[in-house]
Image 1 (cartoon, rainbow, N blue to C red):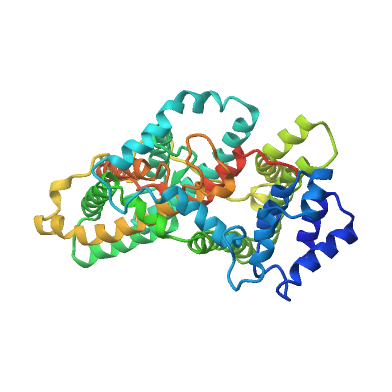
Image 2 (cartoon, one colour; image 1 turned 30 degrees about the horizontal axis):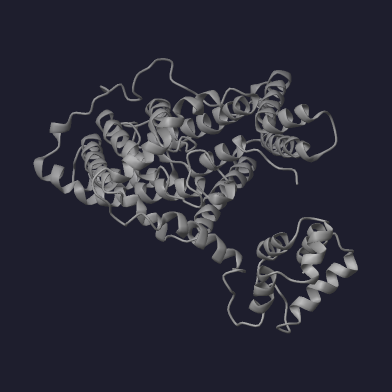
Length: 463
């Protein structure tokens, strides 16, 4: 109710009392609140359609309602919303459907891929030149930490579950090489790929399967990855990603909430666990570094909306906020280590091998023929499961990146969340095959890193 009153006052120039009276009169048509029937944005559009903000013409239009506003008022007498005043969820789904009705579930070979690249390639040069600014530099600095830390962390976890067959070096090499290839060849370059928790869990299950059947793990991993790559390739060339259009906003929100919940709980559990695994000074230093990182980044991010400093200074502080937060906490940890020694204030740091070699010293290429013939064919069974995992993880993340709420215009069809999906899935299928041959981790769209990338490059309107 308050938002509707504010909209009337803002767009029609009435007093607060007159605006409130208008909303109450309109709501009396159905004897109930406006909220269940029409959204704030729809009401706002009806007002704007009847006159500009604060103009006499707009006030006169409201006194003698136009067909748009009359339709809006008449919709209040109906049990279901009219097309003039859809609810927010209806408006969102209608907008997406309007931009996606042209794509069938499956299309002729390569049609979806050609469409994606036809929209992206003409803008390839401008995609590079448009990034030559401080905001892009800030995003690069932020994503350096956001991508490198998970790569090393997941690498250590892969080393644990695979007994050193796949470790930190393999993960870092996969992240670096595949990340650059994907950024240069994908149709939605805002997406960031990396390893994810579900992929790690699947690999751990594959290790157990290899032990159960007394099979070498890396050849089984390679054959599973090759089958998965083939299935993803077939899905890409037949526009299988179009199936994502049947997902709803509820799916997006649940997926986003799940991923966010996992990240937040992992961070809290790591900090809490330090009080049980480390001596008190180290545990307190861990807490201080975490609080400094979060607080510094949050406060500086909000500087954009304050009156302090000049506009350019506020913008740069806001863009570089995460980087400044990480660097500040790192300096505090470094000072504590130098001042009080490693035993009292030496926190665990990320470690990397000293040479470009595999973790276990094995050759980079996996010996495919060491796996029995029957196991090569049987690998299609876990490959089907891996396909479902990678397909959903990739496409739901790209769908979130393509969300109309980000208002991306360049190379995009209005309200369409499928743009770039089929071409991106083609790139993922090829990368999955290549990484399988080298025995390095499969990568897929990483939700948190991708959304952070989009928001770091977005222009925020203070109004």
